[in-house]
Length: 245
Image 1: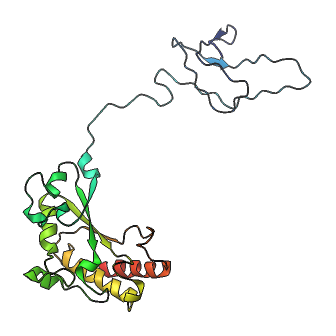
Image 2 (image 1 turned 45 degrees about the vertical axis):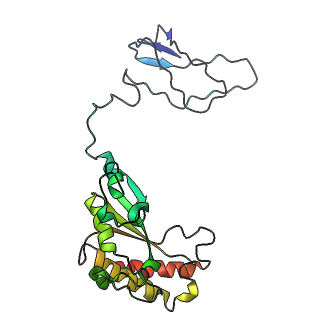
Image 3 (image 1 turned 90 degrees about the vertical axis):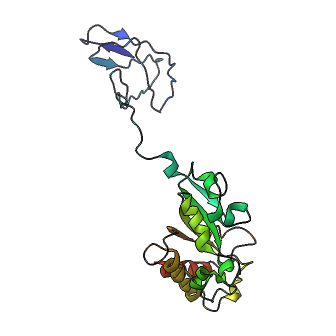
């Protein structure tokens, strides 16, 4: 590499890089010390043969700020890092009492300082014993539990997550071990009804506004827990998503 101001007097450019003779990729060459130049050329020294070719596709030159330009000034990110993170949880966060009873440093309050989102693995079979049965969340709110668990009160559970300043995202769990494919009389209708009453009870438009997002199913490919029939699974997905919307 050589540089010049007048195309008459040429100076070799100092570089730390040994240039491979067969190189076809780009090569960054830093000029040190920085100097003012008007012309740049690449000079090849070749052995005399019957036919010899060299290629130089393009040459770019930048100032002292380099090819990426002047670095912008550092300024705070308007998005809090906490708002980007979420944590997976379960009912009571591994404890023995509902999350609305959580003390500082326990359950959802343990994770809220570092995460703004929390996903609960909400088991469909905890709400009903048969997937074709429509959950009675209104009765649950009155203290009657659910058909699947007599003691369960999702309103109080999710209220504890909200009180810890966590945005609740529910992943509805259903597996072949909890609800076999044959246990569904009408897969689409069963899923639609579940999604509809779930959103109506826990959603923001008509419900308690304790759940912000509903995920239909989770990791169906896990051996031994998923469904072998992809059409059946997609039918449930579509039904529940349509019902929730």
